[in-house]
Image (cartoon, rainbow, N blue to C red; front, side):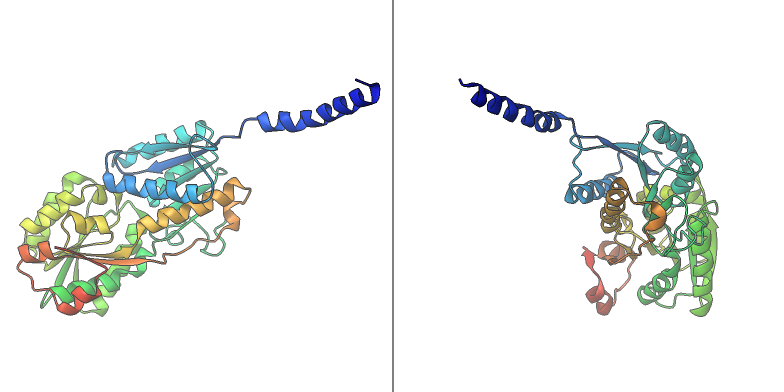
Length: 329
């Protein structure tokens, strides 16, 4: 080989070295923490986390390839949230995805700088989680359930299905700031609709039986359950107690109707967890939570359980059946 040819080959090889070295560099693995109040064996809860994973995949984030997801489950024991949040911070996650007021507050206490995304929360402004929907401020943003604005609609639906409804009892957790606001809003709605609202404050599953008994003894015509993680986790037990007490049960989310509530009306949490992946995508690409406005639901679901209506000997108006997004028979 002539000297000129040799130098040309050598030069080409040297020029290719940086490209080859670059191609061999490992992809940076990004760590995402998921902090939830429900149990690891809660199928509906797992479906929400699955929706979040799907949303990440749609944006090019694949587990084992460029992201690692670290889930932490409080198992319906809210006193575990603080330790689990600290555990995620110490694991050097780049963002924590969570839901509901208590988990978000636990994450905030664990770190005032780590980005936090709530997939669902009742009223983040009223609960002082964010400064405003348009300008969250701080290190937290996400999607609001605007649950405090849906009380009127739920009472109206109950009045449609329960003839002569006068008194409604409401299970709510007084330690959850969003639910305090939701209860107050429902009180206002009840006054406007000329209904009596019975307060049933509960913080643990062991209180449900006595609370439902109190509603029955006070001759409530219906029962409302809320988005508190303990109530959602114990939805089947609450639905059973309600049917045994001949109380039509209204809930917020699809899984409450699937567990036996006669009606549920609220945002699609599956859709919201999927949309939460969009926030994480932007944060991993450099955006700050304070730059990302809090979004509101775009999909609402009315789920009707005719099996429960039959068990309670209630005739459901055909107009309500026609309006339902899903009918359980």
